[in-house]
Length: 347
Image 1 (cartoon, one colour):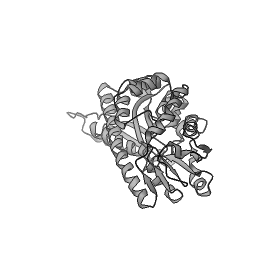
Image 2 (cartoon, rainbow, N blue to C red):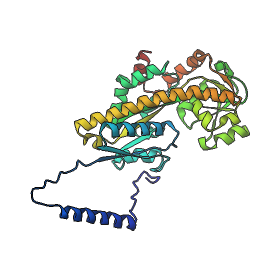
Image 3 (cartoon, one colour):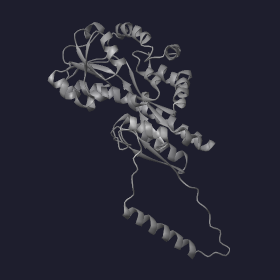
Image 4 (spheres, rainbow, N blue to C red):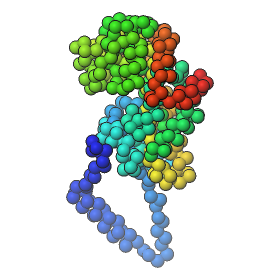
């Protein structure tokens, strides 16, 4: 996909075409040499091929989900369905991938905030302290809350097939340890370029700095921002422990991504293929959930060993008290009906 969201046609090299033509000719010749009389040539069932794209590197949760989906669906279908994964933005950025899935140029995409370009309601999962536990979030996704988002996604040209748990977010900074929300006063925090995230951090009492993620390490080192908020696995992988002293487990947002497929492609599957397809997506969800939870625990221990001062016992209720009114106020970001369903889901 190009940056305007239009499919890019990739032409085959002449050598590839010649190879394919020779292979086809060879197959035709072999077939002609078979004894015709009394011989039945059995037709092979064609393999269904799925292209799956995302923007993340191999170690990222999106690729973990993708590899699990591939392994599961190929095993469940006895190889009748094959998946080719395109990581690292090989198919473009999130918007490009979303547009490709929506147009049918790509079968499956795993994306995050990019889906809000078409389905703004999915921003609900960025509502601070929407969930009290992971189990509550998982029940909501599997129930009425998930059904609502699936309906809205389908109306906009996507079949929502999976929810990627990328981890609860924490807060790091270079000034002081965070034990309650009052410790956020006076800090300058980097946040994603998002109305919801900016409002959330300001409600906590900090000021915000708009810094692209690719420039965050340098910004933290130079003091452009005192701190930032991402899952602890990102603190580990991006080496923020080299430029941050304190880390607090605030669990303010469960970072969520979405796995989507094209409606026409999905509707073209046989009933058996649909069952296999959705079972593999469910397997991938469950695999990533277990993986992410283990990675979180390991990340905090790793960061402690790197010299960061780790606080796993933050007074989360003080954060919840200042963020709850914000969720109710930003109705354009967090639809009240979805908020109500989420909060009513058993913990």
